[in-house]
Amino acid sequence: MCGTSPRPTMVGMTTTTQIAPSSRSWWMAKVTSPIALALAGRPFVPLWAVVHHRGRKSGRDLSVPVAVMTTNDVFVITLPFGPGTNWARNVLAAGGCTLRWKGADHLVTRPELIGADEAKRYFSKLQWSIQERMFGASAFLRLQRTAG
Image 1 (spheres, rainbow, N blue to C red):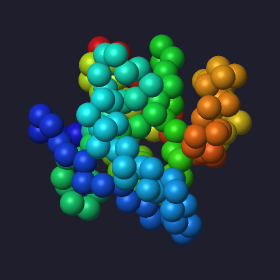
Image 2 (image 1 turned 90 degrees about the horizontal axis):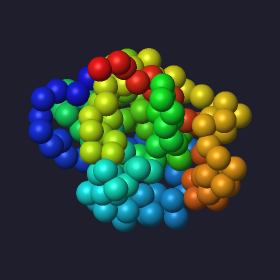
Image 3 (image 1 turned 30 degrees about the vertical axis):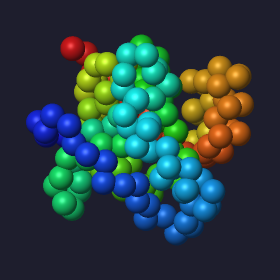
Image 4 (image 1 turned 60 degrees about the vertical axis):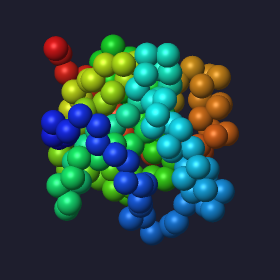
């Protein structure tokens, strides 16, 4: 899980998937990530959160902005570049992370990869339509909220 570093920096989004992200989506991520990271996790931006995690190999504290859907029990994060992104693999390997959402830190555990069919129930029809158009993701990460 994440250490005590007050503001880890985003080093970049990397992927270990066999298929490279499309040049358009990768460019969009590179351009919008600094803006998203600055806004994500703030009380007035509920669609975005910041995942604080520790690198599996480097041991460094890292952060990445993500699109998130929530319920009382879970957070569901869209994985537009698939489950092979290093940050997603780090969270899975650690068994959880800290998620900054709406201005508060949430300790989340039991990360689980889910497909679009299962993830769809966490979205309204409009949200799902937007997710399909913007991200076209077929993989999602479900994280359980912890009490406290």
